[in-house]
Image (cartoon, rainbow, N blue to C red; front, side):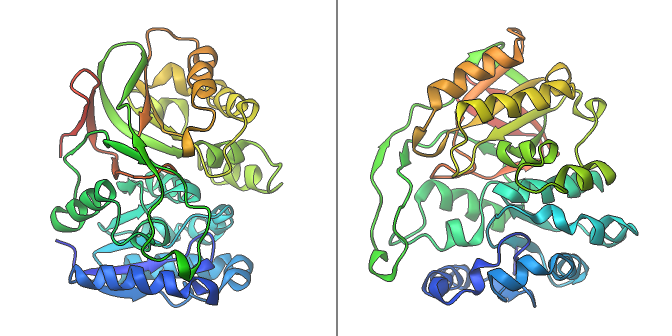
Length: 342
């Protein structure tokens, strides 16, 4: 059972900005109502400008949280777009490998890069939720589906199975104090959709936000990101993907079909789809480009026998489950369930 939680800002430092403090207070209150002791790491709340300018301080916070014997869970504040800049401070002298301990690590979006860092040093992690995005939800309570998985994680230390949400929610467009207690429109959810391949397949899951993976190979956002990711061998080799299931979910930037195609092509060029046992694709935010993404997954991967499942409630579309990485999983679309062995 989780008792002590450390909150880290490994990408954006937004939780230190005055305009989000009313949200932060909501999230801290909910964590404390669970009986959790919360530790905001020293640099987590220093604001957007400071956190962006000091990747070495972000790395210090991450390492310190792993070193602290009292911390049970490391919860990422939010994503962002430049957590890759921590790479030299975590890998140049094997800092992360020499520091990691068996703690729960939870985050999503740009935190995909942190998950790949942890995979590189052999630590399992959990993908799907974050502090500001989920614990600080402005509705009267966390979304029930989201809350169910968060509660399971903090009470059992793991996730046993994932089933689809009955509904999905439109993205909130206004974040201000007058929105506290309001809900966004909900719509019926269609469940896990098998696009092709066997309805039952197994493997350890790895992956995350397809936008972040795109930036590993494309320097349009940050010219040095592909350089650093290559230098520190961040992206797993094709052999490492053998027998795994890759998770792909898209960000709030709602990548165009053209960028989505290019992202899939980058992964294909690196032998990912020749190695994996299956593909899990997240529901896009507001279902934007859903039909185009489904077509592109089949068209670009071009392996009709490879199982592809669409519409997983994870990542940027509300509500969100939590998915263990590095644990043997069995996907059964007929029974609409993903089960985890441990």
